[in-house]
Amino acid sequence: MTETVIKTDKLTKRFGDFIATNGITFEVHKGEIFGFLGANGAGKTTAMRMLCGLSKPSSGSAQVAGFDVYKQTEQIKRNIGYMSQKFSLYEDLTVVENIRFFGGIYGLSNADIKTKSESLLAQLGMESEAKKLVGSLPLGWKQKLSFSVAVLHRPKIVFLDEPTGGVDPVTRRQFWNLIYAAAQDGITIFVTTHYMDEAEYCNRISIMVDGKIEALDTPRALKQRYNTTTMDDVFYQLARGAKRSE
Amino acid sequence: MRTILFLLQKEFKQIFRNRAILVMISVMPVVQLMVLPLAANYEVKNINLCVVDHDHSTTSQKLINKIISSGYFKLTGNAPSFHEAFPLMESDAADLILEVPQNFERNLVREDEQKLFVAVNAINGTKANLGGAYLGSIIRDYNREIRLDWNVPGRFNAAPVIDISSSNWFNPLLNYRVFMVPGILAILVTMIGGFLTALNIVKEKEVGTIEQINVTPLRKHHFILGKLIPFWVLGNVVFTLGLLVAWAIYGIVPVGNLIVLYVFVGVYLLAVLGFGLLVSTFCDTQQQAMFIMFFFMMIFILMGGLFTPIDSMPEWAKLISRFNPVSYLISVMRMVVLKGSDLHDVRVHLGIVALFAVVLNGWAVLNYKKTT
Image (spheres, rainbow over the protein chains, first blue to last red):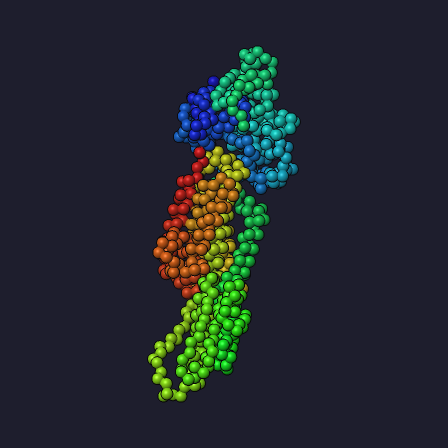
């Protein structure tokens, strides 16, 4: 756990007078599951969008997979997967068509696309849904599919923005099994969540309050530091002082 | 190259699954070409005429009969005085009032001269102008007839008259539809191409799928090409359908070469699609895109020479219409379909439209940002 795949230094994003992300500094190691926590409006999504090369930082620096977020966004994009808060596969394409399309965009060969989509469908148990339009699937399945598509091209890092929002507990558990499987394959997971039980599954977590990172450690160390037994309490102690909310 | 194939495959699948688009591209050309040329007609007919005949003579009766039988006028009223006829015009029941003075026949015979009075309701400018002109020419005609009937040669010193005989070229029967159909087809191609592209990309923004695309290493120009090509094909399908409708319903077969038409439309579509793309890069919602497209389409259509000739616009308007891609297509359509112009004749138009295509698409690619 020594190789660093994400490294930021005072990374900041301003929208006019509003500082969405205020000088955050942290490192993420290869193969770890990094939980990126914070209240609504704390600046998590903004930070994640900067790391994915979707948004240009206002100041500070960051490297993702060894590439600079200012100048090398296209190289970054080749090495990451991204699953946004909003479901963003094509609802009017079928499951296999979506897999094929995104596989093609990432430059996978036809043979590769074929074997990968077969194994992916088997892993998700979605063989019989392969030819169904994605729009007709229940949300939980969509989210699992969305994740599998995001790691289809075997990126170094995958960014997940509240991947389990609105999903039932059983599906959430299945979703985390997928995350563990991907982490075992050496894919670094960068995930935001509001579920504190999910935070416990992470190797390390950071908690953002009003654009700043207020705490960063393993779940166990954080609980010790804040003298409590649950992550809920840790989060509550840190985030109740937040001035911003949606 | 391979990436573009994936993009095209995706785009075509989505188009063929979208019933609304399929219906629009097949029904719109047929319905518009069937309805508009028949309804949007410049020929002024059914001009409402009110006659105030103070003379009640055979001559005045004959004149009125001649006017009515021309087919352009409809007698809506006979009033005993102008004073009583005027309310008809006030209520728009009459477009013209023709007043025949007392002793019209007698004075005409005795003094070889008589005056008629015509009042024109000028609220509808075209109808008033043309109605007045028609009436004038019918009365002149009538005047000549009675001269021949009544004048003994020699007694009357004929004033020298220049008689004009004219022949109509390219549209010998002055059939209004022949003039309108190519223009309407041009508008159709523009509307379908422009709107579909603009709305398509903005829809991806609204749904959020564009973010998933933006986070991939996909090149910008690949993305734009992947959007351009499918709608370019659709535009050509619509155009072909339109040509078929024009032939089947109006019997209009382009006098010029079809290849010239397709070459021009092919380049033109690139320009219009580029415009749609550009609009989409400025908008975040389909509603915005729709309003912006409507704003420009209205100007493009009204200033494109479809209904009113560009040549008779004021100088500043002519200048604006030079930046209106639609005006080039309308004029080339008419040139090739009606006159049989060849590629050499339309080369300037082609060059300008190609320039539009390069500028608009280039601008769209520059303005499409994967990173904000």
